[in-house]
Length: 309
Image 1 (cartoon, helix red, strand yellow):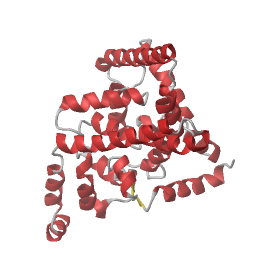
Image 2 (cartoon, rainbow, N blue to C red):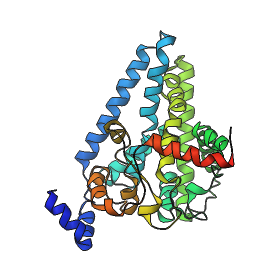
Image 3 (cartoon, rainbow, N blue to C red):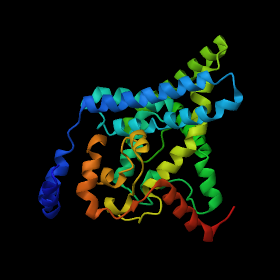
Image 4 (cartoon, one colour):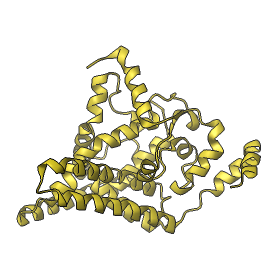
């Protein structure tokens, strides 16, 4: 966009809204290129892990790097449950199911959860992201960041759903049979993979999936905490969501979702158009942080009066 056009749209709210709506065009090509880059990085980090298995001294760094790339499959999962990553609905749904399987976060369930979060962002009674215990102390913050509460909740909820008990208020009755079937499919898939691994005497699942996912999850927790923590609990999406400035690598890994204010204001805008949306909305965005470390430092400081480790 030419500078003059950008200034004109900022001065004319009607023109700006039209430009933002126009950004909602989806692209299979853009989505596939982004996904291919993420998968190539995952394959490369996995190859380094496999090449380091004979040296315990060298194994930890590639395991951690691979784990971070792996858990950030949350980014394409998130984009595809919005069905904005690709133009074709079937392609969105297929990628969402694979990513959700790898992260123990079934796609149909997560779509219901996440769309309720968008509908009721920052509403203490109805936003499912606020349903858990509040992070009101440094101890609670550190426990959350380990990622262990996430894995515990995911295993417990998936097992409960597989037993036919879908009790969440944000899941419509019409979707509950699909979520039960999805949970059962996930558990059957995990059981088959575990059985095949044991039968073959292979540790690949541990080294390329289980251990890296455990190591990488804290970094995803820190990233997700920056989206809304410390923002005003108001209905305005440009105030209750935070945009966090970061480097090119993180932007690629999170599919531009560091521009979270623009995403919440216009969730139909796909990842590749978010930088333009962010520029158009910049004067209205209330929460903009210079980086993820700055967000966590501020969060930690605000917890100090109410608890300490």
